[in-house]
Image (cartoon, rainbow, N blue to C red; front, side, top):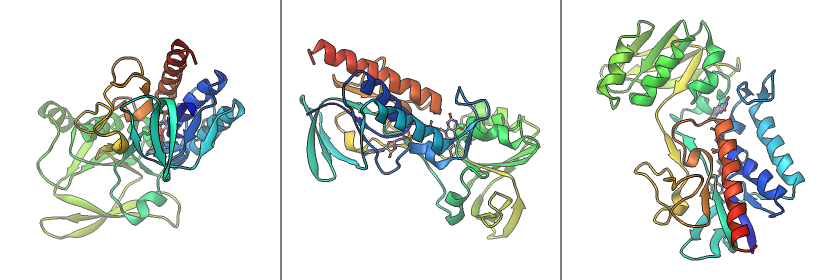
Length: 307
Ligand SMILES: Cc1cc2nc3c(=O)[nH]c(=O)nc-3n(C[C@H](O)[C@H](O)[C@H](O)COP(=O)(O)OP(=O)(O)OC[C@H]3O[C@@H](n4cnc5c(N)ncnc54)[C@H](O)[C@@H]3O)c2cc1C
């Protein structure tokens, strides 16, 4: 029987593990399909406090993990497959085995949607990004492309126009999901150009090790052409990793956990942390802060229950 099981080994889960470890609760962390979470995909992180020169994303998240292990956290390279949260202790199925826990911290993140192009993954952190707040600063005076047609694409394009010499929005249709107010604001931005009815077929240049351009296709005429670009930003949404909790935890229509105040979910003893609940900020520091909150809530809950 565990006191705390933490689902996810990104910034949120690892920070929750530090706090619950230091509270002598011997947490178990399930690392999941992406050990280290989204930061393990990127290169330089310049906005996590405490690192004046910046720090590599995978190093940062591994450091947080080592700090948690130092305080007694146990890590398993395992995936939560299903769970029964109808009564306490909660029951979790992990790689075919059922385990029990008094509290659960869900820090399973929200994965960015990618286009699925072969070169895309090879160039993440080298010009390909899914986070304008995180990486816009690297593209001062450069050519930037934003993929998407929703509010987040408009928001990212406007934000990135502070840095880039030009920003081109590429959208596969000529109709937008974005709200009128966001579209109007974006259309009024002189630095933003538009390529509609256009899809991205490939990204270059893996051999050089950074983004130099893309191959585009006009879906109406079939015309193919190459275009130079330095920064390639995906803004086509995120998928919260909440499948094992569907029907038990309150989720919003997009699948994000609905908070019931602080780090609490609708189920007493189950807490949320990080991007799995936060669709607004999506930063390493906010995820870590949320991990801290969930851990303190779990610790107080266990104490009140006499554990
Ligand atoms: C390319 C890129 C660059 C970024 N750069 C920055 C930056 O410079 N600065 C910044 O502040 N933020 C940056 N971010 C955002 C930052 O990475 C996220 O906000 C942060 O990682 C969220 O942390 P999290 O712990 O909530 O979720 P995640 O990091 O997404 O971690 C989720 C964890 O849950 C696990 N998991 C999921 N499902 C299961 C399951 N069923 N069972 C077990 N485990 C499961 C996964 O394996 C993973 O370990 C970047 C993101 C990306 C994609």
